[in-house]
Image 1 (cartoon, rainbow, N blue to C red):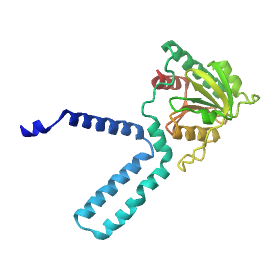
Image 2: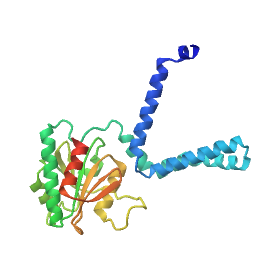
Image 3: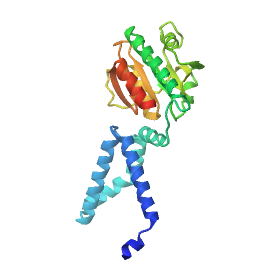
Image 4: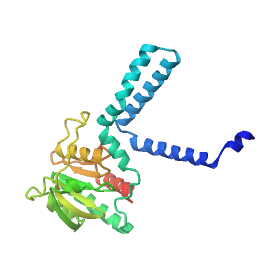
Length: 248
């Protein structure tokens, strides 16, 4: 009985908060390069505990020395992943504040535009801003405030347009900028076959919570990029349903 009397309601809240944080972290790092890093850290921690228990002084000294700089190394190497994970806390839907009917209209216009551009082998880079601001990436582009329509998107990306080389940014269901330049990924594991548009999409989604549609002019295929990961060769149905799952 004494054990139960010592158990406070604050302990329950404490455990629930820790469980929630661990669960959210698990969701955010799932499928990212942070997973093998965490597995490696767990293995190092287990070896360290074993070295202390069995009094393996040399191993213990080496791991102690590594531990002094390990945190700095992790922060430097995985700074983009850490920044992206932190910004995902409290993120909301892309079309917050829009009626559900408007959600479907925007997604339909985007899907139709992407499919038409792909069929004509016209390259495109369409960014969906979410909670993380993209002002620094829009500074070099042209600011707009326009309704999302298939015709406008196509006109921006036709080769004769002065804005076709950059990215188009959509926020709160409106086109807010075009001709924007994005940071290229520095991840050495990204396929060498991917072009500049795909690398820019991966680079932006590594640093922010944005979602990006890429249309390849070389292959005439549609890709969707988020959290630094790319899904390639989407058709209209898969693209539409994926966007609906993400934003409605």
